[in-house]
Image 1 (cartoon, rainbow, N blue to C red):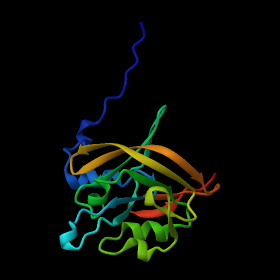
Image 2 (image 1 turned 180 degrees about the horizontal axis):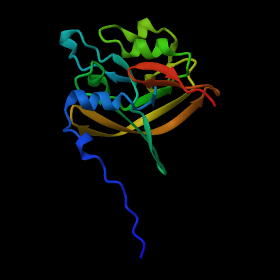
Image 3 (image 1 turned 180 degrees about the vertical axis):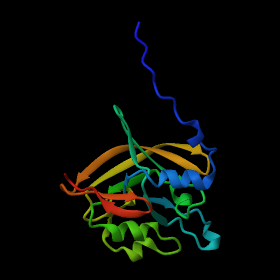
Image 4 (image 1 turned 120 degrees about the horizontal axis):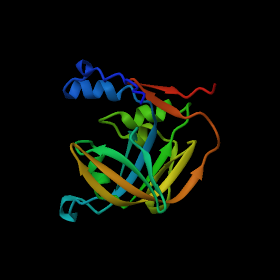
Length: 186
């Protein structure tokens, strides 16, 4: 019988996980850049000036992925400390926008805290269910939120695509090592 020696993993290179090492390792993963938008009714009572008017939220996400083809499901994550979380926690519908290589401005605006992102990025319209739809994207999915799963300091949102829009072919915007880049064809 022939024995093949397999090199053993160098366990001296394995280190305990800490937040800084974990974050540094995850920065090595290239991810497509999406902007998720949502709308929910305000919850302020009328006596405090609230009239239940819709409030919008939008944020840049690199955690978007497909989950299932049958039924069609997608997911993304959002930190529960995010300024967008109160809207996402109540939103029934969301739109996921796959950004193209020329949309760094949209990615930056929707990743910026403390601003009115929809005023800072005027290239959008109100779509079905009042969900904001960004213009000029590679693709767009209008989805119904079906599950919210608590996961540490984030929530995993699972959504069912109801409609999609194909903005045409083009290079995607990619996030890698803390910055935006694009996929280059060989």
